[in-house]
Image 1: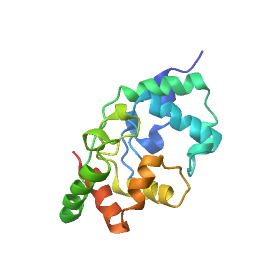
Image 2: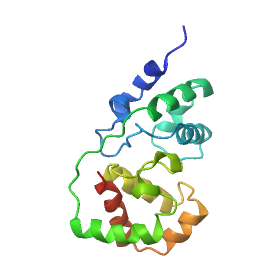
Image 3: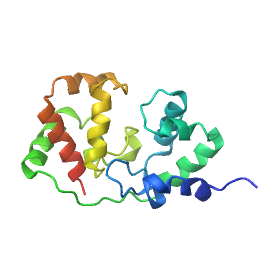
Image 4: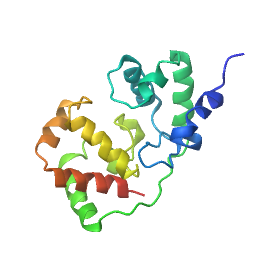
Length: 169
């Protein structure tokens, strides 16, 4: 018998949490992620085009059909956000930077799954930090529009933006 979407998704729970809601600060919540973004991300892991610790190896174990089942499953789950300890002044500064630098691609303060940029709003701060470090170090390719914006920001401005995204409830 073929595995069901739930059976496949359950294999992700060890890191990404039940139904894709992460309790681990360095691991993203994948619940609510668009199915298209999930499939693209997994394909990038399979090809080695996306930096990872273990996902590159894990992704290679799934077929396109299995990935599609998981993508549809996680897209239907609710993204849950947990309060985090953040610097209020940084969050406020990040809000201003968001309007100027990020709002055109990361809609609704980074909460919209359908913009196919991943959900940033409410993700764990350590995860957001590690991901931005991968982008700025060239370990993960930045879209050209994003690269132009990020290159203009200082490290403290980037931190403020990430704190803003993490603060979204």
